[in-house]
Structure formats: C-alpha cells, structure tokens
Length: 217
Ligand code: E4P
Image (tube, rainbow, N blue to C red):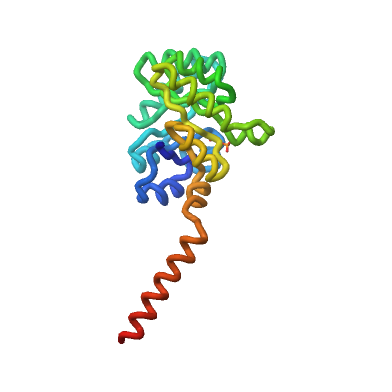
C-alpha cells in the first residue's frame, strides 16, 4: 500500500520524504489555506520534493471552471493530480480531464455508489473520507471494505485512496483491506513511529552494551 502525506506544509513533507516511505501527497483548499505564500508555488515545491503524485484541488464549482482550473493545476508540474469534488459538475469535469490524459482524484467520497460513478468516468483515484464518517457514528472503514470488494470485481484502473485518516489503526485497516493508498496527516505518520517497547528495548540494548564495554576497559 502506498503512503501519501495529507498536508500542504512543505516543512511536514521535507521532514518525512527522506525516510523513503512517502509515495505522494494530497492537499486540499483547507490545508493550503493554512500556509502562507502562493499556493501554486507551494504545489510546485511539494512536487519537486516528493517526485510522486501530488493532488491539488480545484475550487470552481461548475464543470467548465473545474476543467479550466484543472488544466492550469496540471500545467504546474507533471506530478500534479487534479482533485475534483464528487458532484454532478465534478463528474463531468473528471470525464473531460481524464479523456485529455490528466489524472483526476475524485474527493469527498462518502458512499460506494459515488466511488463507482467516479471510476466510470475515468478517475485515477477515489478518496473515501473515513474519519469524517466515523465522526458521525458511521463506520468509515466499512465503506472502504465495500469499495475494495466492488473494484476487485471490475477493471477500472481507479485506485482507492483512503483519506480523512485520524489514527494509525486507519492505516492498519486500510492495508489489511487491500486499499491502494492511505493518505495520512504528518502527525499520524509520526505516531506510527512511537512504540514504548521499541524505546525500552533500545535503551536496554545500549545500556547493556555500555556496561559490558565499561567492564572490559
Ligand atoms: C484528502 O485528500 C483530504 O485532504 C483529507 O484527507 C481530509 O481529511 P480531514 O477530514 O481530516 O479534513
């Protein structure tokens, strides 16, 4: 399973890319609004850093506007994936942009039928938002399970990109289900590095080593 960083922060991305575990990045208007500076320049910088798919979202709400913006975003860098929301207009825009050879990530997916329709119009990725479903007492990962099952029966070429991830168990469940990608906030990736037994174990290894060498000296 590929791991993307869900962030518009160059600092977050610079910190994690050198680890070699990051395959791409997703941004959205809310994430980029937190950053200072020109968002197109930020997207370009993120593309240079990650050298993999970077989703950048349109803010137009009509299909012609989304298509225009999508083409402009795609012109920023070859790694840009155009993100459009799942609306009637978004579906139309996805169909056009995909037919032009641009990769489209259809976002704000909250049901398998939405994902199925996005796949039918050539989406490269669908982004089911698991955390936001959990927030309203609906099992977000259950939707992913259905998507994996449905997509497994057909040959869409659309990847399931698990989004709105809140904690490391979402990553574990996404991987167990066979999702293609899990996009995670930097903090959730950091959390995955923490395990008390790893810390305790390493401390003991180093202490034992030091003790043995001090005794020999
Ligand atoms: C996905 O691409 C979105 O940027 C993101 O995962 C939304 O997550 P949130 O529900 O934490 O805002």
